Amino acid sequence: MRKLISVAAMSLMVLASFPAAAEMKIAVLDYQMALVESDAAKRYSADAEKKYGTQVQRLRNLESEAKRLQERMQQDGEKLDQTEKEKLDLEFRQKAREFQSLSRELNEQRAKDERQVVETLRPKLEEAVQAIIQSGNYDLVIDRSAVVDVKPDFDITRQVIERLNSAR
Image 1 (tube, rainbow, N blue to C red):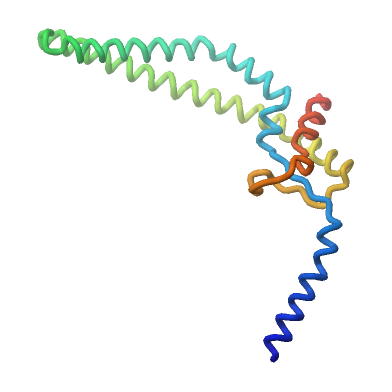
Image 2 (cartoon, rainbow, N blue to C red; image 1 turned 135 degrees about the horizontal axis):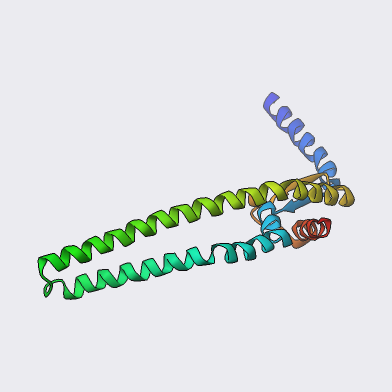
């Protein structure tokens, strides 16, 4: 009997809390998308393509040269004498090392630049988020990654992006 009374009491408490939850204004925000889709991030992306274009092209060239050497070793390997095989193998290894080194440097520099952009944008993003939360009078804002599905009406990401773009 006691158990029945406690279950009934708990049920009443849960039911009583639903009207309060129904009055809450809830929104969902995709922080990552807000950062990536902002005008500043798009400008950075375009600038990065220009800045790193020659290095990326150099990586592509190294990759194609290494593939060419590898194909030659596979196709002509039996026809080549030992000295020629060793020469091709050495050249292939040099290209591979140069590719790895340049790739690592490029990735490190890009990551550094991206961190700087994010550090610059984060305070502006937070201001835009707070402005949208206050103007929309939201009680709860949940990160989009924590939500399985949401109606578009509850997603404030676009509003935040527009606010971020207009802030400059």
